[in-house]
Length: 194
Image 1 (spheres, rainbow, N blue to C red):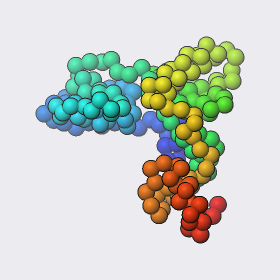
Image 2: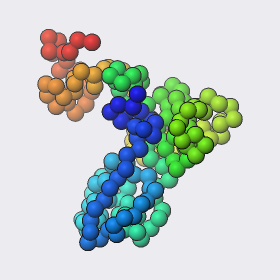
Image 3: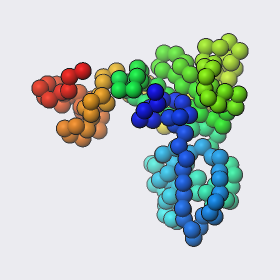
Image 4: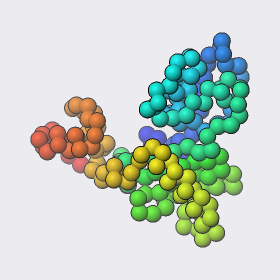
């Protein structure tokens, strides 16, 4: 299942982005550019002529939206830090998608590798396929580059079921898993039962 956009399959991660800005953006364009939610803020700031804070992650894709460039990112990065029993996400994972491949892994091993041109329905998982070893190495390199660029680390992960049953937002707002776990220890009668 691909509920809550937590899985590395097209039905979960592929969402169209729509921009309407009649004064600057030509209507009716269809662009095939990789875009993630972290690219939205820098792109919208640039379209509005505002500075992009240096600490802001994401790519400014305004030149693509304006039709002044066709060169977008060569890949998109995905992260899930905790399991979620609600949709069968058993472990934290990281993934990278290019125009042709989707690759995701857990900390300990590759999970999925799909050739989206040959297998758009993602039926044949190539993660353990010997003939796809060179592709896996290439995608692993891209994934490592993304993790380094975003200062991501497997150590950020947790196996605590903090997202199940609304734990992270039901009673208070928690900004870290540790913050929630401390609250949980202090409030055992309020913790949802599994």
